[in-house]
Each structure stands twice: as C-alpha cells, then as structure tokens.
Image 1 (cartoon, rainbow, N blue to C red):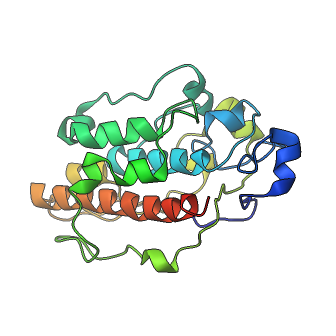
Image 2: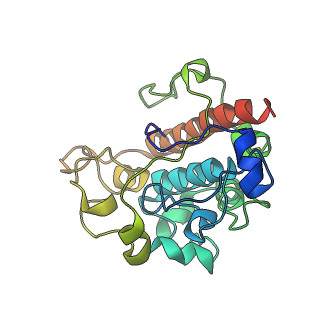
Length: 229
C-alpha cells in the first residue's frame, strides 16, 4: 500500500489504443508483491483499479489469519479463496464474505470500492478514531494518495515458485508486527515472539475491528478514485 514505484495512474487516454479502455493498463510485465498479485496480472492481461481491491482482500485475509490466501500465488487461477482452519472459526461470516468478494478471480465481478464500503461487515465499524483496546494507527483518508497503485518487486520467480518459507514474502527477515492469530495464541511482539500475558477475547475482537477499519480506509481511498470516473 506504500510502494508506488511501478504504479499506473488512470484514466489515461494512451491506454485506449492498447486495451480499448482508458481505465485498463496494458500488460507489460509481472509486477507486484508475491502473494498479492491478482489473477489478471498473472495471466498477463490488462489490469486496472480492481487489482487494488484484490490487494485489500489479501491484506485483510493475512491480517485476520496470519497466512496468505493463495500459496503459491498461481493457485488463485483455478481455486477459490478458502476459509478453513481453526483461526477462521472466530471470524464472522460477514468478514469472510467481504474478503471473498474482493478476491473474485474475474476482475469484472470483483467488488468495487463503493460496493466494498457498502458491505455489511464495514457497517459494523465505528466512525474514525482509536479502536478500543488497540493503539490508533489508521491515517486520515485525506492524507492518503489517490492514484491506483500496484507495488513492485522482482516477481517472476515468486509467481512460478510461490513464496519462500520462513521469513515472510520472498524469504525476507522475520521482523514483523504480530498478526491476529499470533495475538490470540499467545502474547508478545512480532517477529521474535516474546512472552507476556495471553490476550483476552476483547483484545482479539478489537484487533478484528482494527482490520475492518483499515479495510474501510483503503476502500475510501479507492472509492475516491472511482468517483472521479
């Protein structure tokens, strides 16, 4: 969400010659972060703002479960997103439906930002402000950039082989903030673990609310772009 190195701003009249749509970017090469790449880019097809909504779905899935929805990334081409395992037993069906709509393989059937904002799960999110039980870390939507973004890394190998085990995407280091499952299973910080008292159900619920709030902020940013069409 913060790497705009290879982002493409839409609309652009130059795209029409190649894709027939000023809102669709012609494919040039695999770009994005392994595990977050939408099917249309893996298939080397033109892409647009739906790719950003796919990324929001992957981010929400990972924040709630601690894992990526598709490993290797090419799994998204022929299998729908699944919500199996004990971790999903405590996640509402509304949250699962929200993610599933964002992870629709067909970009034309994927939820738009406006549809995401109107989803039932996000209607349970309180107005902006600190989430009870967790520190406030969600920026104001007015401070967020409005261009459609797809971050870049060296991905051809990641797409073919999937993410390396151990240290997160691409085999990077393990220093990372704790995910919701890590908070529920046992306290402590991210990456290196650490002791601490086991969090209560209230803290876990607050973490889920924070994920929903972050998703709402991201959808607000994307919806602002859509409103300019």
